[in-house]
Length: 259
Image (cartoon, rainbow, N blue to C red; front, top):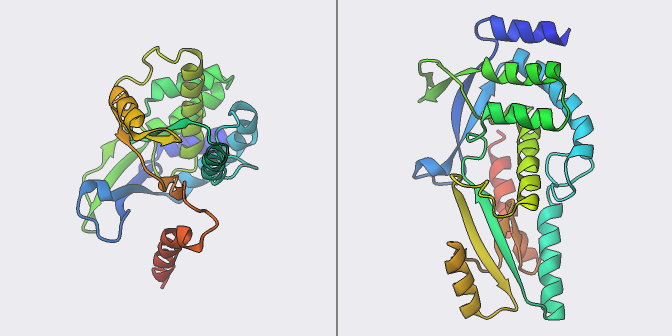
């Protein structure tokens, strides 16, 4: 039955078409980087990919390392920020010196190559039929940009994952897991060449001069506490009510739009 659905999605015009809308990241957007593209996906395609996503999520816990805390069953995305905050508090309490290197990928979903995704799925043991389903759902995708509420001419996708696709987060963490394994095995093999990152360095119990030298050598900026990790403030007094003011304001802002 699932194969039949995918044949319909790939062959029938409009079944795998979507509209791309820009959603503001900040209250007062001024540039392109202040917006996030979200795909408005049709119901038939969403049903099919939701079934695939549910099947995929049932095995990811066995494939993805424990350091990945987002999008997986029985794991919480907030585990990462809380863990880092505990490490910072422990270093300060024990007066241990440490450095935290924060790396952020730019346009992470857009940079995914489908041929590499197929190799990753094969590496993790997914069969040819499953890979056909996944790549078929991606390669048949088309979209139109919404400009002032009106769609532009439709264009074909050739790479990347769609924001709003139920499969996207699971496929993305599989890609990241492959990079994590590669990085762990050959840390200086150059696997990250060509990937634009926004990185910064934080020192704990280390003099500012040493931090500056290290940041200059790595080509990154110096980070200060508190800083944001996955949208959560880290490094400040997490037990303080004031530390959560920014998140509370964001939640209030979103709730105010539900009218």
